[in-house]
Amino acid sequence: MSVAENLLKIKKSLPQHVVLVAVSKTQPIDKILEAYHSGQRIFGENYVQELVEKFAVLPKDIEWHFIGHLQSNKVKYIAPFVSLIHGVDSYKLLKEINKQGQKNNRIINCLLQIHIAKEETKFGLNEKELFELLNSEELKNLTKIKICGLMGMASNTENTHEVKKEFLYLNQLFKKVKNNFTASNINVTTLSMGMSGDYLLAIECGSNMIRIGSSIFGARNYSK
Ligand SMILES: *Cc1c(COP(=O)(O)O)cnc(C)c1O
Image (cartoon, rainbow, N blue to C red; front, side, top):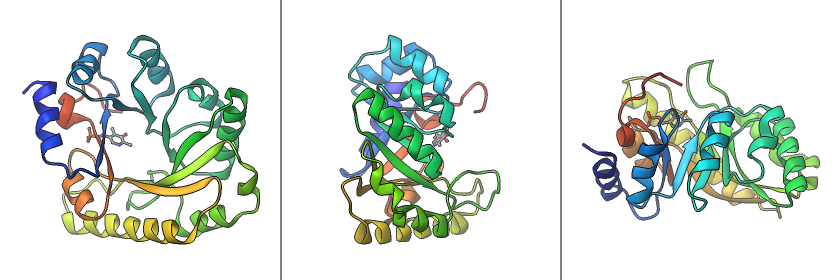
């Protein structure tokens, strides 16, 4: 099936409140344009240089999300235009994003990444670190970031029971944060969880933003 057909099929299966991020990492410009021309406006990338190059040549009404692991020294390259950074996992990174927000005179939307998978290799805060960050006095000084919600990646396993457990846990944290933290730079509305293999389950477990790559564009040539 074509990119347009895949997109249509996925969109039909989504409840209205769920936002679809088309994960275009490793995909060539023509495929991204095919998705764009069938109406998709939100795209996700996980490498800074690739994102910057694609931003430069693609239509300016695209909302670019950064979904990878972001190094502090690279924030400056995406700060002028990025719509949402999904993978924020430290105060240090948040502080750098704030600094670049100041330089660019804009507020940069962020999601805090939570480590929910069994794999040690995945990034993210644990529950204790999450609440320490949200309760910290210094956070109040960061006026050029906005914490819009949480993001997580479940274990890469066929075990649906395990994946469901992880998603439900993240949803529980999301609700806790949503109900207990509001500040001028905290407005928690977004729960980013679910990829090609598990997005229907993620939605069932409370996700309202899914990140889909291979089900739209087909298998990637090299894995990132
Ligand atoms: C690659 C990637 C996705 C999309 O994965 P698919 O299985 O191709 O849908 C989603 N989220 C993150 C963080 C990714 O790196």
